[in-house]
Image (tube, rainbow, N blue to C red; front, side):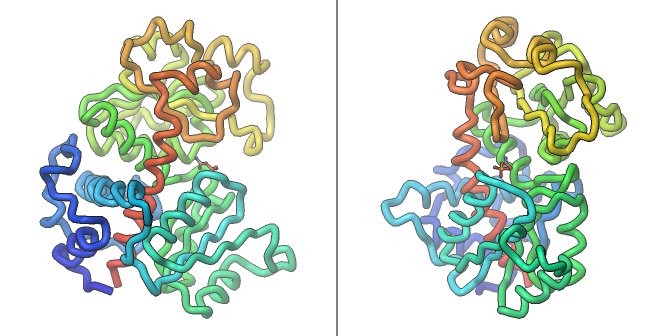
Length: 343
Ligand code: CP
């Protein structure tokens, strides 16, 4: 594998993803150093809170160069040939797990799939022992989803492998945050100065946190909206706005990111009824008439149709929900590729 220099990083992308020159790549929406001037140094991707604007932009640029691979008849490049990626999932997933698997396969890595339910965790094995035993088989990268916030940070202390956080409790889901930012930039041409409203169960959402950190770092104005029981005011101190009035928030919004109510993480009832929630915070076609005509609608999935958003909105012309899923592949190829350049 190439050593960690800007030249080696860009040359592997060029060789493997067909040379996507700056003139052919989508314009970077926010100014930053050119790809060849930036050296990626992080061994792990644990969250967006600690990433600089330059680091986020470098991942986005790398993902742009990998998008072309998915348009080929043979959708594979040799960038991670001989490397092993382990999907270490302690919680259910459709999009994240399959997309990391496919991303690793498109980079020619071998992939091991671990599901806690079908593993020796059920016999009492600890997270540390699980990781150390899998590492002993000669693997390179752990992609971990875990119900406990901080689990990915914990395993960086038990392994020499790269670690990617694929969602830890209510803490962060950095690749989903990057997907949201990538999709917004693709559709709107910029991030800086946009009004992004994130609606729903903010309290339990790792996606809301990662999206906020990334968008905030790139200059977007983020508003959190939902029932007061699900929208903590904590983020006001970092520059977010908080409102409980969706119609007012939508009037100013360029982008709305609708989130699922995470009943599995709740210990008590936090709003009177689903009907009341839909009336106040559901995104319907009627409600969208009061928003800007080019409002972009996002949702990280899985969707509860008829709750946080109506089916005709989810499937409508302003929705980029399936585009988010497609973009997830390029973002995860970029994350796997960049980390694996670092010793
Ligand atoms: N957006 C997301 O994380 O979806 P999954 O839970 O299906 O992976």
